[in-house]
Image (cartoon, rainbow, N blue to C red; front, side, top):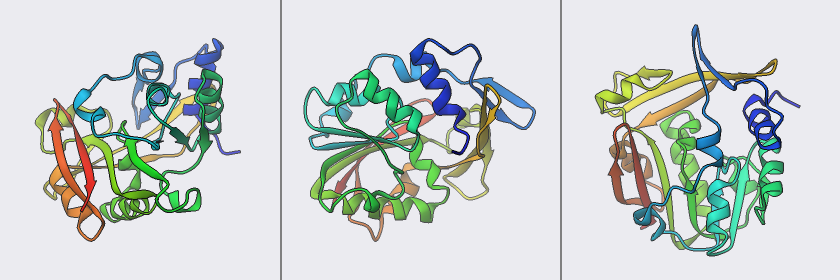
Length: 232
């Protein structure tokens, strides 16, 4: 099994067995990855986002199941994550349907038109690595969602000056683009290098061209944005 410091640390935290920090490393720079608030806190109560979501819903990169636990009280929710440690944690926490799956290979796991909406909050879409990868993800997501589906995604906003202070941020000379590059370490495990493609909402609109999706609405925070996607 490949090292999974991220999943191990979160599971150990859940079990009360974590004695070390989960560390994000960018060369010589490090930071302690926040676990309790990010993965075991309250669901982010965002009525603007939640009014777009209906079941069946797929929660992509569901982590420890914080959001899936909320949504499954309203409608059928399938929570997926690539980490077996996190899938086990979600099940132990009461997520009804938690599955190990890669959000970038959805066609391998789900039938056409399986879901009415999709939820991917946490900038995981950036792990597509490139704008071509984002476009491929949107096509796959379109395949497993209904013709009237909606989806919510987020990312950092490279056009904002404050985003340059985000850990492991890299500039890109092209407008509306950037990167984050780092890896994680926990209790002797060293994870793979994570390459997050950062892109603006305008770049998301460009990526959606040629797919069934369009950006229906978007909202910006200090360093991040959230966007609602709908089918054309």
